[in-house]
Image 1 (cartoon, rainbow over the protein chains, first blue to last red):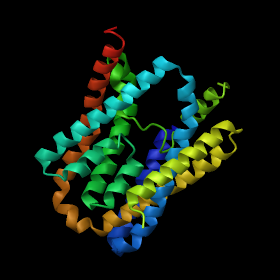
Image 2 (image 1 turned 30 degrees about the horizontal axis):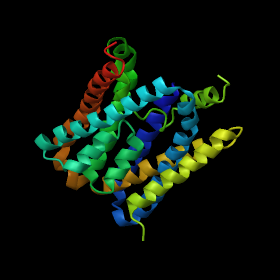
Image 3 (image 1 turned 90 degrees about the vertical axis):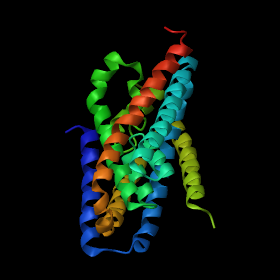
Image 4 (image 1 turned 30 degrees about the vertical axis):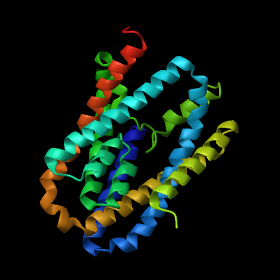
Length: 178
Length: 96
């Protein structure tokens, strides 16, 4: 099985197991949240490490590719924010939490838990919506890239949940050892 | 007392510095970061499941909204972002 599918399966299993145990044991959120915060800091710290590892590659990529990369990033952020507003209003969802869920850009393992700290329903939306977004991107990208150059902005998150082979290749490439 | 957001920014900044340091070295620490990242993600998602599970009864009435919003978040932001990206790249490259 592909690494990204294994990573997604592991995360879905952990989420499902948590829901079942939570529904049966009914723990007080205040008893769980201090641990969730600690894991959240570790996840965000690890994301920072991956950004730091990729930074040299961006610097070495050249001006044209760097400008293109930044343009894609800015477009993805703008699209996420507008979409969050469009989705929140007709469904009567909290405006900024919905924008946050859309800004997840497929990073379900962070967005879902982060939003669940504010609202259980928004946590589920953040997790499931971003999980689906990543799965759709992985499934449709081979088709979309033929007709739509902007297809990459569908999932701006990429390797953070466990696409480690991709990142290792990036690191090797950045060091001149492709 | 630092707020949640401030600690998150500090975690990100600290991670960035560690990543920059690791990118100069032989890459021995990368495996440890992978392990810490994977374990933290699983623990975080499990904790989130516990919180959601404990409030399952209260969110059951919102099931249809949750499904519609999840599908919309999976599709709409990516489509809008890709349309904006396409227009922006065409503009940057002089309509090429």
